[in-house]
Length: 120
Image 1 (cartoon, helix red, strand yellow):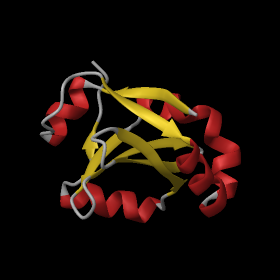
Image 2: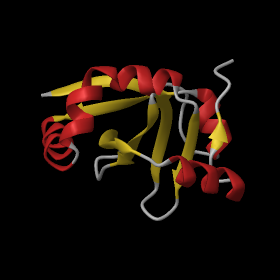
Image 3: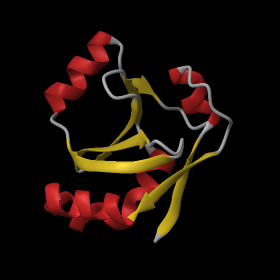
């Protein structure tokens, strides 16, 4: 089972300097679902149906250099982070979903690592 849950917008591509085409799809596969359900079960149960919304309306985005993942961060009561990783096949997959503490968000903002999305 493989479904498309969103697209990497031109704004995200430009903010992060990604060598991608606008509307690069973001997929969710069975192994991604299993990982999120097992490793972050509370967040998964609460936000699984909101994955497309998190991608579409994230407040911040970040390129994590260590693993070349794209992190979408959305304030929904608390800050929730959805990590998107490129796989060996060159496609982007939703990989992790979990809460991120406010002080971590503030530190990443101070370092200039989080980019504010305007959705214009």
